Length: 140
Image (cartoon, rainbow, N blue to C red; front, top):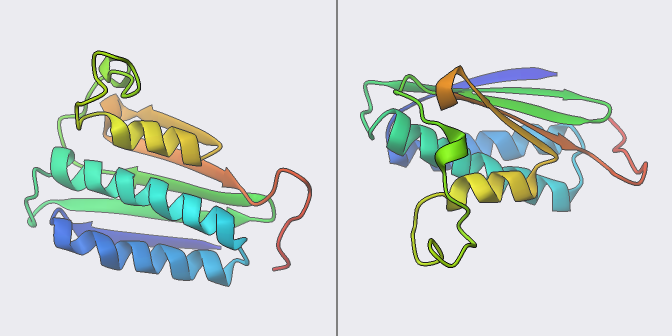
């Protein structure tokens, strides 16, 4: 199953997009613990796209593409911004950056998802979450 959601580059649009994601995951039979993890990762990715990619400009758009199969869900989030070099984002757990508010979203995405890849100069993030690591796939 596939779904595409486009939102304005406005922080107020993030909760509605997250609700649509959660409805999609529920329809796919995603286990509750994994739905929580996907929701947190997507919320961070959307916040980055809106705040950094769109500079909170509601005239710009962020696109989220959802795709599910028997083994999990794939999500692509894309913004029109200038992008960034993901290798230059500091580890938020290091002593030097522990008090910084930057970089935590990417760290959370990587912690919650099974795979996170940035392309198009950081303007596009692909994330994958498998339904199960123990073979307990949902019944869909």
